[in-house]
Length: 125
Image 1 (cartoon, rainbow, N blue to C red):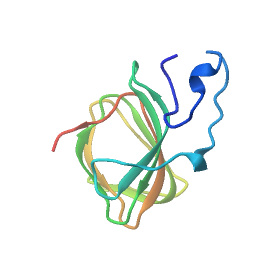
Image 2: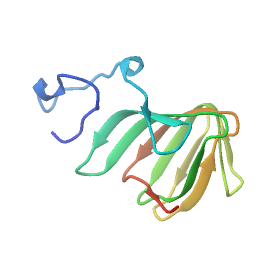
Image 3: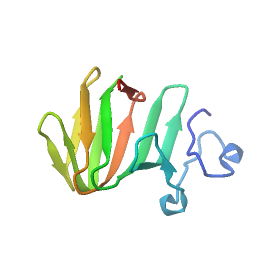
């Protein structure tokens, strides 16, 4: 099995078809290359590129210009996520972006997001 939840020990011992419950609060936050942006990887399939992550952005944190290599989906759990198209996605709302879309994103007051990426983003800056 290629799909895993990083930081969860013992997954390799489970049958391939078994469910994988994840105690999210026990997962560590990992820094990203972008100041003020951390993530907990809930699912990663390196073979296919699929990533599901809980993303925490500090107030004012910014993601530089990037391209979505495939569809990206974001649900805002707390705070808000703004972009250079004028969108301001607030808690309880959702946005998705098509393959090939490019934009800059930031969180004016901080945010907690769940992001689903069919392929990792390609950062252009």
